[in-house]
Length: 218
Ligand SMILES: N[C@@H](CCC(=O)N[C@@H](CS)C(=O)NCC(=O)O)C(=O)O
Image 1: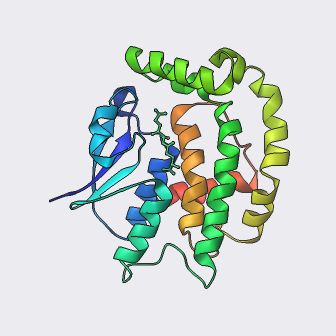
Image 2 (image 1 turned 120 degrees about the horizontal axis):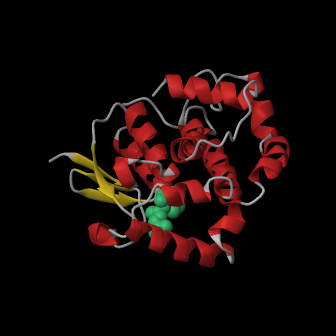
């Protein structure tokens, strides 16, 4: 039985979900092979077996785990002899804090790319995405993304300031080598670069350089 990751999918087999990227990087870190099952926004019936409606879902040869953090914990507990996702005494706590920080930024990050995501969906998914996200933001997608060229400066300078200092002092968030904290953050930057041509990061930014180091490890 194959190890199967249920992975969000847009048109042209585009895989951009930040949470699914976290899991893909965690599986690679552990050296675990897997296949993916594409799930479109309007294909939630594919996830019924998991008892909830969101990806990622991992079917690890019959063990079903959903939620990217729960999957990371599961992989760490189930495959203790493979390289750890949470190096150091406080590694797991630090990775969780890093993930929680990234999650707290994801809503604003989405405002820079939301229309670009919409453009990459098929017509059925577009109708779902527009209605669901417009309800979430309380305004049309066009208004959510409006002014991004002006807004991006504050996002870079204020929201990403702590991350910038951190990756200026060390090559990876977890230290000399990447670990789950890096994957938690990189998932969101992958989300943006796969879904959109908009430059979330400026060339020369230490975070840009960290992202390049992460891309080189893919
Ligand atoms: N806390 C969850 C969040 C999962 C989540 O929000 N997944 C999104 C994909 S990025 C999803 O399935 N969205 C489906 C929808 O919006 O209908 C995790 O870390 O896995």
